[in-house]
Image 1 (spheres, rainbow, N blue to C red):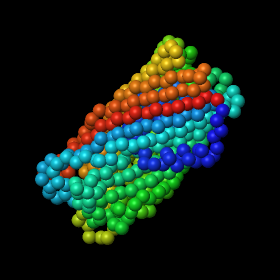
Image 2: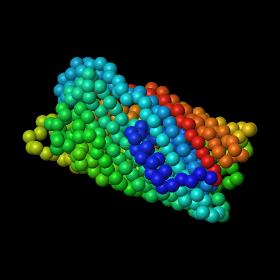
Image 3: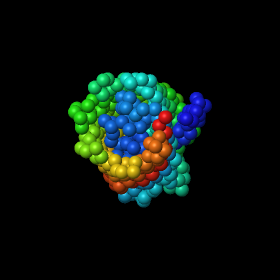
Image 4: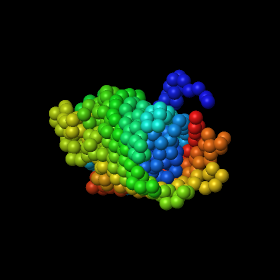
Length: 426
């Protein structure tokens, strides 16, 4: 059995920090763990690998001693298109035409490991991330009048986990969430008149924040064929982005929203399992994400006082205007002969950006609604090792809204993802 030292784990954590971006529901990943991703993110009631700890900590009591590694290539294609000649408001004005974000490829690792302490207790650790709020519009497009424009948000989660399994195969679990964020904004100098702290608005390089939360989960058999599972991740309270306290509401506060998932796994035969998960994320409760741009943007543009709680960086400051998001996920898994397992899935969510909020969301066009996925596992070495694969396609979706009496903006995105992983059971 290979020896995994703390130094090895630290290396995995460090490479995981590098600019996350994920197939997204809003800006949360559509799933965690390559097997779940192959079924559109379902599986909260079907523990199969150590990454179940990221959504349902109770699940690690069922997966044994194992190590799971994965790396994916993710390609989001984002753009905005302006129709009509500029007028005021808003400020700065946007030139007519279509502009693509030129950052299209990301390499994303994930890691998990579990240990069974005895027949009832298990511990584990997962390293996962969130992203999707990553854009880069070339300086030649002069998007907001300040040269190259865009934002780069990375989030890393390190989650030590404990689970207890009862004699009836029910289980409960808990994870401590230790979170790291990195953020940078560029090209927003023309918004200085809307900010309470213009020197902390844009082009200050990457700033970091740290925080913590908790993740709770359960597994409950409803008979010999059906299992119920659920998980709740609390709001993750983060330190502030001081270098961007003139951009985000509450002087740079950017907490991570709470989310909850509940689902069923129905083993219809020895080979076939059907899954359904329902997930809700409370984006609107995070002021930097949920606060609307209007009417505050108009008020701040014409104010006479140097600061205002309604302007960028204020306690009630301008945000991205995101709504809460509910996502329904469907998955199927078929265990074939010769140690092959095949998967497919589909998810649909009500994307979080209203058409009234398109102007500021040029920076973060998280408008995806659908994901189609497939995947497989091939066991070898007497079942001690696995090769895992998943693929995702999220078809093009757009949101269009007026930004002035004479202009509209249409935000558009589509996504692709391929992931390859290796697992060791020991």
